[in-house]
Length: 83
Image (cartoon, rainbow, N blue to C red; front, top):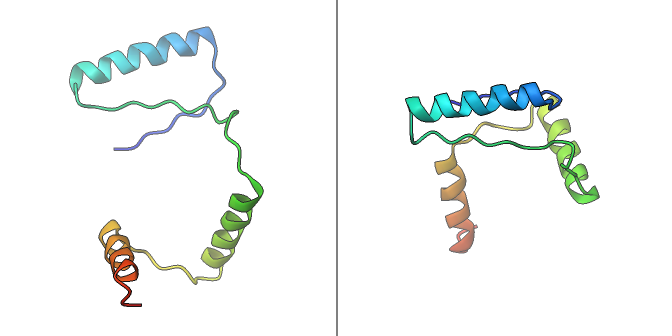
């Protein structure tokens, strides 16, 4: 399961999140909880252009869904020089 919470950090929110993480770990010791500070996230110009192109292709219906296995198989084909 993937969950997401976007909020400004306050001492109260930090305390609530800490307790939530502890409870999650108690229920499932193998659970992984990650925090990302989106204020520090930066998209460089090259990535920005790639993302814009992907969004445009998605809107035009030019993208197809593929599984990780599809990506691995395609990558292996390219590496082996079959394409």
